[in-house]
Image (cartoon, rainbow, N blue to C red; front, side):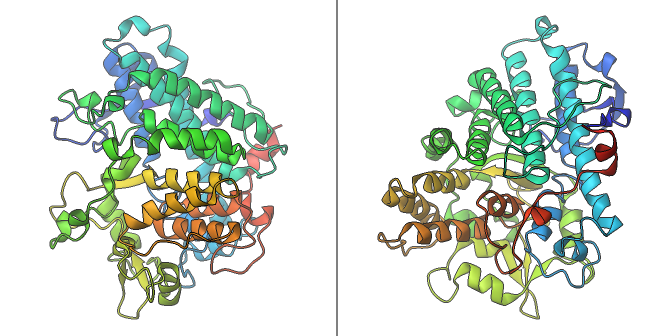
Length: 472
């Protein structure tokens, strides 16, 4: 990588903590200081970590493009023919259209900029261990290691081939002006897994392992939304599955599944069927292993979904939604239909990120990045061909907790089970950017509802020009 450190932010956000009822990440920057000043105290390290999360909330990253924006448009999740921003994206015009290249370049730069800020923490924290009280050294280091792995893994999923012997991305492990060369995908995935293993070791002290999500200490509050121990296990399961190591993928997924009901309980019907919009938990927040609080989500959702102008609105034709949810048969009561709203012309628009007035604080301003249900899908996939009944049972557990009372046929063959897993990804992760990675990893012939034969031309994002010029 031509170290984007010539342009990287060497200034990190400082955040002033508000009252304990404030969300951990639902704060805005007040000022900036040089990292040499910032990392002089425990509070400085806390603020630097918050700054990394804040960078991730940018609309060029998880605040739009890596969730409901670019990656969902690539995966054909919208009808974009009237949408100037995403129509060229959905037509795979990666090499010919400057606006599309700019979107991709901004993702690359934003991700490596965030990684640089994470590395600034990791480069310094060990020598400053004496600054920390309680378990804060382990928590901060563990979260930073996990964030570095998470960000690199998403870069690999976008910019790397599923043929892991091919050259993919740089794995940047220190803040430096030196060029970091690209590595083969199999080395990158091992570095990701090493960081995740080290993160889990540090996060063994995470209060969430005892079921403690809340605290009067603002830094320890809302552990279920932070990069906590079980989020690390979930990401590790994802990464092993990308490597096609189903034994370890299943083991990590099961660690989450086994504690799911105690710490990340399934959404309750009452929290979906509430009369007032402000009381509806549209992101199924109790199930989130890791989520970002995006303070301007209402504006973002209005721009692209709820009150969007025709040239912005991201919608999908009614045929595709009704086919996806099987509304004429088993899916008519699927809770996930509440993710959507039918327009006057019978198209559907995503309502997952709707922010009504006086929205309940526990639900508001939240974009999920990894959820409990995915662990069931990973467990199901790992059991296909090994124990098909277990695979079906894992899918039925999610379906039952989505209001689908008719179970899958116990006699489904392997191909049929895989088809049901794909259906579940389509329904469950609308607006979360996961369908692209799933279709890429499982080598789908085409994206659902879009019959263009997929190759690396569609599935591997082009590197920024300066990476091609200066990288190795």
